[in-house]
Length: 473
Image (cartoon, rainbow, N blue to C red; front, side):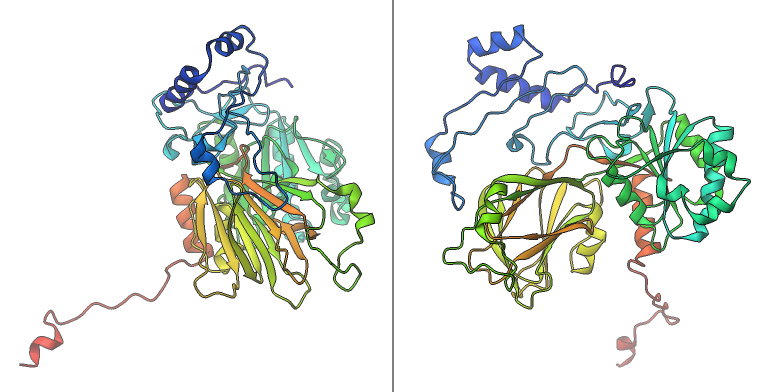
């Protein structure tokens, strides 16, 4: 990849350097010397747990009594910052990737002493001028045809850029009939989701539509995501701060660099197929469980791995029974969720389905994961916020009467059987969303305009200074 060799690496913070020196002091001398001679290879150092750690450990169903964990490892590659794979070092999750696509990164801030930069210092910069731009528009919306054509013409003719679009967006019947747009359409680079990989050739993403376009753009990039510039042309527009009326000026500012960005964290989700743990279980179409002969080949395999921007939803599906799932946090059973389901969301997703289920709204820069029950059969079951560094696991309870269903940002819905597990943690690949003003003003403006947060008729002031209770005497 052309831009990878020239990427800037932000120096680790003082806190991170202190962690490195502490680990160096604890490492045996031979191991320390061997790592200094071969920096390109990375090995895991095993350690023996102490008695206190053994007492705190709680076994999962079907898990052996103890398995030695690998100790923390430090990535020594030149193109990536140092970070620890073990989540225990940082409560706010893995070190976020600070390079977005081939040519974009966060402007280095040498005065920062925190592991996560001060939100006010999150500024976008370009190692090289962007060349390839991905334009995503809302499909089946005729009102977006003119903005789409106008933007593509501006990027190709005036900015001399290479524009990527989805094939079904170009094959629109209205666009095919427009002869004036024919010359521009022939210069567009098309791709198909699931068939063509464009993750290494896109420098900037421009979305035309609502919040769904940003979610779709996130799903196209399962690793590093280029900066996203979203224009408000949809129904809600909570994640789309830009107005299309001034798109030429706004796009020019972004190309110049030094724009404010919000790092929207994503969830790294794994669905692992396992064997049935329920003894004496009846198999058949009535309970939606496949016979063991059809599941042995998939046992213990990761059937799906995704990066999710909003939320992971586990619900009861078409069944009339309550869903009954177990929730684990870092390998320890926390609680069982009995109700319509559970939502595991990012701060970005806290203003979506989670907010409708009664959860609090969290700013995207807060490193956290939110767990929200859906209509729980317990009045004391309230939404909780956990640190971004933990790993959540959801399994079907052994006593569950029916299976569960899981969806990821409203897509790829599938059934969860007994023995299957859903592992969720914070991804190190956030979505860099470009701000129109700054990350604080944009978020609160979205709360006021889109959700009408704390909007009410103002109380009129008293015309008389004295209180009515003072006149009684």
